[in-house]
Length: 82
Figure 1 (cartoon, rainbow, N blue to C red):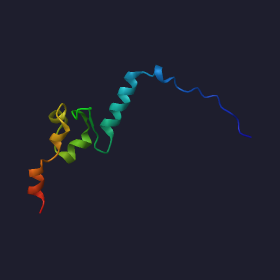
Figure 2: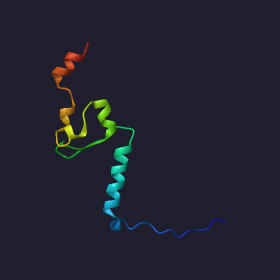
Figure 3: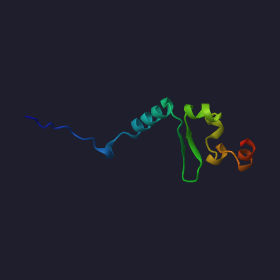
């Protein structure tokens, strides 16, 4: 016979925002995959260490810039296609 457990669910409106921010930061900093977050205007708001390696940019160089600055221009693409 299975018994029912009375496990309280978290009250989401009382969650500590500092704790959530710390957890999100820890995920961003330790993720194996590149993570880049942008706002609705395409401005880069965060850039994790795993994004730095393959893209060749340091976060201090890209935070605040438009995400399009990470993409090659059409001219660059034409020059690299063989």
